[in-house]
Length: 307
Image (cartoon, rainbow, N blue to C red):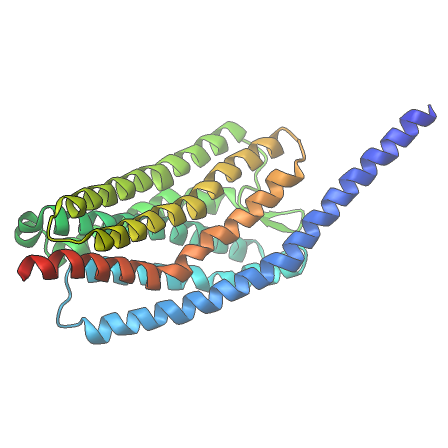
């Protein structure tokens, strides 16, 4: 009997410790991380937007159209973070009401996937410009990029709209999936978003840059050092994409699957919270990384070809 009592106390102590660690992680680490990401993202993306509008206004080609939409998406994404900073600093107590909770979760989700899709658009556009330059020059115009951009916003908004139904306040928390009913439908929706919202764009992005690398490495006019630079930049894009977006979707599905089964796992829960912060890292790096990729590939492939 004493053993059972001690075991129970040990279990309760362990659960209490996990809960305390979870609160400590969310309260002490997430707010400053989100704060730094928000500041860096806003400064970098607003500067990038200003450069596009002022420096590229006479040369508004397809790459600038997609990049501009990506920058706008990142700015909107960053503007959702103050509410989350307040939320996590209060130990995950939401004080802004159910409607604001739904809107925040919708905007967070929508801008996340808009960002992913415009990364894909930029990657495919770079592939066409470098691997199929004559086709891109004759058939891919800025008006086409504007139409595609509009379709991306409409598609992602439609995909994200169920969040307005599923999200809400539950036990004082602003939950992405507050409704405890229809677990099978919610699981299907999460898998759908992981596949259509992340996996498909990732495969297209990876395939596009793989095609670019093949063309660059076959070009005898490019030195081995320059080829390595392009490969490094392309590899960095794919690695950052994998580290930022893939863990978020895997851990989200895993976390809510365990939650539906009423199983507490501190590491999965903490990893899921950390993956949210990782997902925000990309919006800080887009102004630097994608402009660097664009300039590097254009300088190496286009300038040398014209010379």
